Image (cartoon, rainbow, N blue to C red):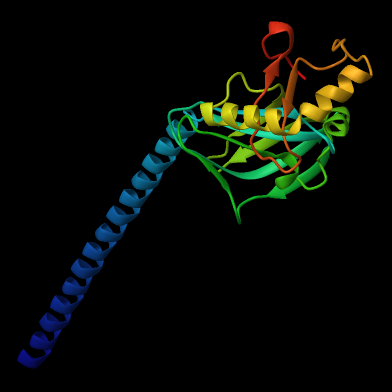
Length: 221
């Protein structure tokens, strides 16, 4: 009888220990799950707050070259936080998607206040000639890693860095003398047919400046 009672007591103690162990493990697991959920919620809230601080302006403008009017793209981060563009999409005049490019393999990152200029066809191949792009493309959409989507405008940027101005002045002096001569010979003194924002540079240029015709400020091309 004593052996049976001893065995029964030992079994009860073992069961009690297992219950306590499983209870502690369950409490720890619940705590970890709650902590993980709270951390995820905090990360989501922080991401949403950062997304609200993103401000991207995308300019599409015309670079007048001897080989044609090249479509240029200037991306300007007007926010106070860095951003990364991982997708670009060309939207047609009717709202249809004309082209889409996944940039996650080589994303475009811009620091706060940073501006970058490039040819549009460097990220959307085939979208080169300005007149063709403006006729067929309503705007270009850019998606950031934080999920924001920003659209482009047909307008030359309001200002360019001092280095860009020096570059464009040097190229005007070296490369455009012959173009000005031909313009004078053909009597094309009336520039009313030109856009107010004309940017002159070599065909392979990636960053150009603009001139304001008759002293007017930048207007939509």
